[in-house]
Image 1 (cartoon, rainbow, N blue to C red):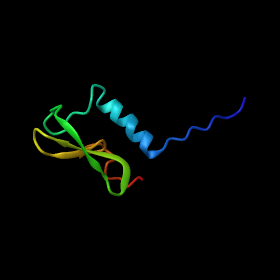
Image 2: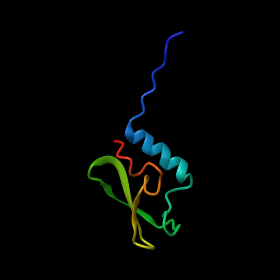
Image 3: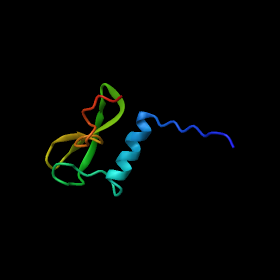
Image 4: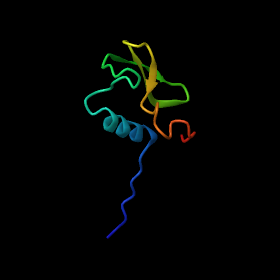
Length: 74
């Protein structure tokens, strides 16, 4: 039986985290509102979607508030 090599790209990992964190759709991590719109992408990580909450006007991404958000892993 041969080995199976599984390769996950940064973008795929971010998508998996987003689906796990917000199974019913993206919600603001600050106020909990579902009134969230896409707000571009992180300049140094083009696979990382940024969001803007139209309720509290704060910005966040799928990694904001996660333990490894500031690890520098790219």
